[in-house]
Image (cartoon, rainbow, N blue to C red; front, side, top):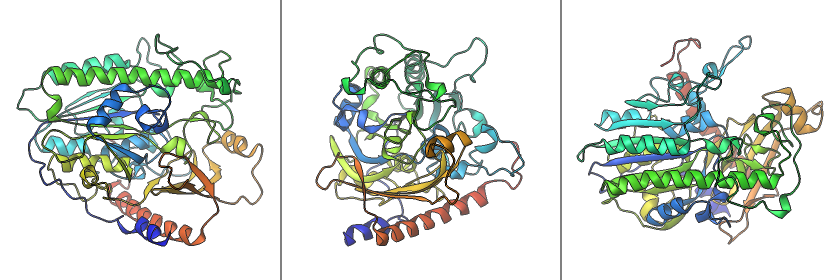
Length: 474
């Protein structure tokens, strides 16, 4: 165990190497699927055929079995994905007397690295196709995109979010208009899964039958986020069982997978697919009771943070097709990996590490720990290859309702931090993490590694954020 512990701590500050044969320009397509947990994807061992397109892509590329989101929420996870930085770099701390809004709390600083901006600066045409109203230009996420096809804000009269099929059509039309010698980058974000089947569409809604073991109807909570109950925002107005919610979720995955197939087919018909690097990932998971949440995300556990990550490099890049990698990966690694595959220098402020070495070498371990934060309560988690460590403070949650639903009433007079060590069953690569006895020596080493990571984050925040918290944003 001791060599493994040392391995966890050795590569956090390593430089991201570039791929030796990364030179020829081409297309880059990054597909982000919100609320997609890895264990509901067929090629990750799921027992339902939810993702035939993703499975085929994994067979042509490299699948990372130990990929983790940097945050269990939509804004910070996408900020981490596009910036290659810890999501807290995009988080603003408001004065205690200020009532915050989404636009106040989150803003990717102007000087922070951004994948689209780097590619644009190196001659790539750039476009984003986004279906969630929170992922708009006001938060700095649109920086570097020449075209940003976003979603209308919730509540706007006569408007609706684009469907997966519409996103696929918009991307296909844009990609089809690129010249053959043009380098391009497109970012697609699918957020259909977050709704948990609130707007059912056939044949996807009833594609899978509910599991008999999940036939209980969950209680409905009073808030948008609540422990041990279905959030009010996820309630469809009927008495749906947990099995029906899960089956609807799996059907929505299949629908998005089909839309992604349309995108890839359009590239294939235009003779562009082989020249395109494709990265597909989940941005966070969703829980069906495993973490105390039902139909929601926001904890630091495996169901909310373990996501699929598949990288299929363009032709001419060195990799092992169809390989599965146990190397730890984080969403912050996507941006530096794409830049390395394109032969573009990785900005020094990107905290992520290039996964390029792991594409061709099963023994490569670009990073040893992946960190996550920005949960519904204060705290952080660290994930190694077969171990996870969580330290959190549930009494410091976003609302009194969350605190009371966690404790089943008022918190203790002197609450204690929640410290959980989990391990994967030895020899079972896809076994879930299980609670284990706390190893104090390992805990000290992981805490020390997190302190170093935290120091990097605070250094970036203090340098990149303006001193005036109310300064106008992009």
